[in-house]
Image (cartoon, rainbow, N blue to C red; front, side, top):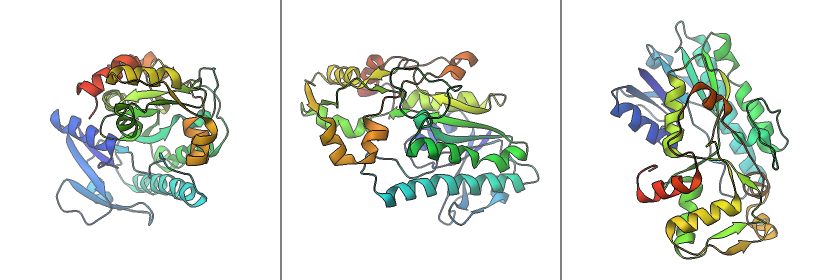
Length: 302
């Protein structure tokens, strides 16, 4: 296949590009600077410009670009930047694909399990209604921005990703130095659920969906066994053979991270990848203890 990727220099994009290229697929990177090689295609997500001539003959586009959610304090300016980067970039790409005489047949567009808001102890699947909050509102508009591509006949799936676990980036990379120093701590009361996925399964699920254009709409990219924050903390401490008996009170977490704490750290999200399971995807890392051990040993996740 000939596959174009936005956000190709990020954690997921880098791993996906390497995986596809290793198996002989042709990978194009959409870049915001002047392209330097034949494997790069120019685009301006804020200006609404995409070099569609460079996408001619492409079988699929995987759209991963967007400003990271955190961990960081959510100021009003940061939330506006997060929203703008996702919605404007998606709208620009979808509109460009819609204008092509022969657009790629498949578009996989990044999204997030934040759509479901705080689920408490209830399990959410793709059929669960939207929740409330900044992330839920963002995801609704983010996914709606792909409609021009859908109207042009492109098969579109929304990748509602959970927290991606990898040594080289994201939440786990931020936690590892603390846990290795014996400062691992559960956050708040630790009873809130964390939906997660290993980087290996994130890449595997994307590749699985690239080959199944009949799967459209939202698809949850998360492991089938979410865990509480306390369980995750214990499993990470055990994998590193370090104590993890401390606790960070909710008030302290909110003071440090503001709104990000309530919607991405202290929130309970118990999400199940029902559509992936029904379609026959086999998880490499279905449970968190094995996943963390595998990742830290270097067997899964960069």
